View 1: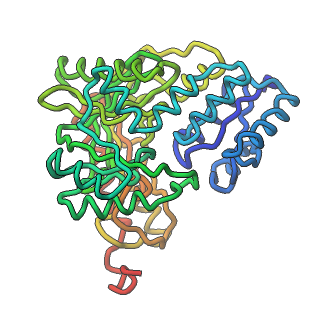
View 2: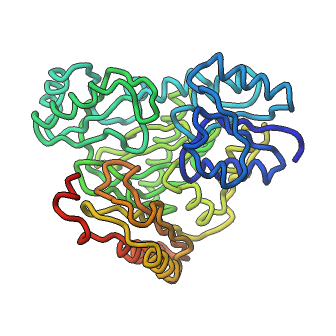
Length: 420
């Protein structure tokens, strides 16, 4: 190690959080995870990652912890892999005079209502939307747009709280649920405002932007409505040149309109007959293992690029590999239970043995109850496949996921247990 530190303020619980720390260590910089509860991140203990327990929602306490680390060794950068803490990490980086996004820009971007206003004002295509703070207002807005509509919180991640509502009763019920929430799943105060949006039914994509460069376009697979759980991705998306250009140009315009342009941004869009429409801009790296797909398909390591940018270095974003990568997530059809350890290991091994499959994993422990996914937390596992062409990559990922599905039993729960 060089004696320099990279401060990581909180993390996502899977995927890139662990990778951020590993890339920093591989680059000769010591990663230090500052978090309220180290137990939330099992990978930290597994990897021997140094942690500092601090209330990251308390600005004074966090700065005290940062100052102590500054007194110990040079702090070379500040990052986070959690969307909830991007503004916090940006503010700390700015206070230390280190590279990072504009704190106010990412703070405004995280408020989806403000983000919608800015994008619409800049002429970037977005769905029709209304910001409401009461149930009656949600019902009125839904009637104006025409049902069905999407009702969702103004802050959130991973499709949490996002639902397609088919009629006024569903709009009222979901709006009431969202408006009653005082904190989100991280315990952070939730704004008492929600969004009611026009439902766009075109195919969904994301564009991974770095700085103001569109790096790659990703095809998304979304599970059964009324929720919007992402159940798969294909990298790069197979698209006509005109559609590809429309998605990339719209994504970059959105990033620039929001005052972003440092590091990674994950821009989600739908391709409608009227053009590309932005669903949302996330001022962070993509989740859902997309950075790993990009690395395998394109030879571009977005995690390393983000780490290097935080350290003040210029990352390499030129494509060096020309393959196709697909991921499929395992979700439960209904309430069930994971099989016992021996059978689970055998199932995973069979999935990994599928030609072109390069990774297969189940996130849960044997015997754990599972149920239909309402958001990203309902995913049970995944398979990743890589091939020279789109079809074999997608087919292998599908086949691997189908084999993983054999690990879920729907016969071991009684009706009483399923309702418990």
